[in-house]
Length: 188
Image (tube, rainbow, N blue to C red; front, side):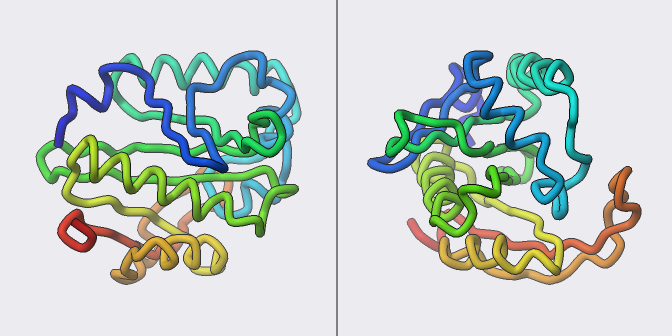
């Protein structure tokens, strides 16, 4: 893994439809729309935020986490709407020893079912395998989140199994998580 390259500068990744890049405070209204929706938090840790000031502070936390080389949050922008922020992509649990990372994504529900998560995952996979040269990319999905599992399957991720009551999420208690992974050798 080229860990030095991962944090050399904030990544900007793109294709013809989607741009993944640093979130700015100019996007606060769209950012708040994502984080204030209850349905966004149905299958991820945490709960919807109802205060725009709290959500605005999250952008600073994302910067801090990047500077600490802890995780990377990228805004998902669609080109069809003048690069409107419609979601977030995450690269986290970066394990240099095992040469692997975990990815995640969340979208404003108004943009569900349009293939944006599938495109975003493809962009992340291409970047992480092609430029950063990680060996393994993994993702965790709650068993009831079949739509997210389909996103991963469309990107050639393999279902490895279910970790039963393997995580404690503050607002949900103990949760089961399905593990999906993709190895660099699977596609390169």
